[in-house]
Image (cartoon, rainbow, N blue to C red; front, side, top):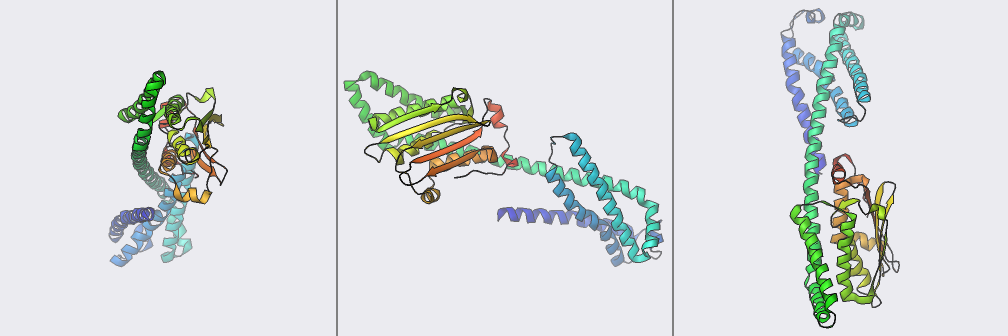
Length: 381
């Protein structure tokens, strides 16, 4: 609805711009001289001047809609400059010819076609060049409007991405510090301090490293981290959960060493692992296994988190959509658009699998350079 309102407002502005142009030309027709008197030797009434003025401007306004559409296809900056210029020159030629033909038709209404063609020959060259000028002006304005719109959309996407990042960070922090988790962790550490001080010390260090990771990401406003850092954060989280669940929580990793330097949005994997523990492992007396997979597939960093828990019906998952999963999906959609994929596979007694893929890059700048405004989201959930 909002998009329809925006488009309607845009077309209203477009019409509003051409109205004064038509009025100005109508005034010139009212006080015309020279070649214009050959078409109609008698002075025009205001009604006749308005008809001829808007008859001259209307074809340009209508053809301007096609120019606007064309600038959406031939986006700036162009990938191939020569192709961009050649297509615009071809379009400008067609624009000038169509405009000239419309003027011939308008004159023919008052003089007949043979006379109209003779009159058109007297100014066809000037009209043709004028057509190129008008085309260039309309095309330039269209490109400027599109660029300005794209920049505004980018700013909106960045703001939305920042908000989602902060939400995910806070959700992750709350997940680690919720009273139930904290109570069980402290209770376990208290028991460990008495019988196994070394293990208790190691657990406290991991807990501190985990919190430091979240706080550092938040404090530095880092959107991206390496997969190696993210995996280490997840390992610290899992080690603390294993203090509570013991042998009921089993972890398997299949990590391609070649992708550990790849960059991804921070706090992407932990919500998926937390979701697997909460719904797939913790409720079962026998526990279960969480498998984490990271590979390179067709220049994409492919990640997978799966558990062998009870699973669920896919329609229930689609309608529920936990906060963690939804936040990860939205962040990928916002950052990468159609270049990223997110999919959930589950069924009763079939476990729960979350697969995601994003452009593989070892450069923070390269990841940040993706323009979501130029892509249509194709995130599947």
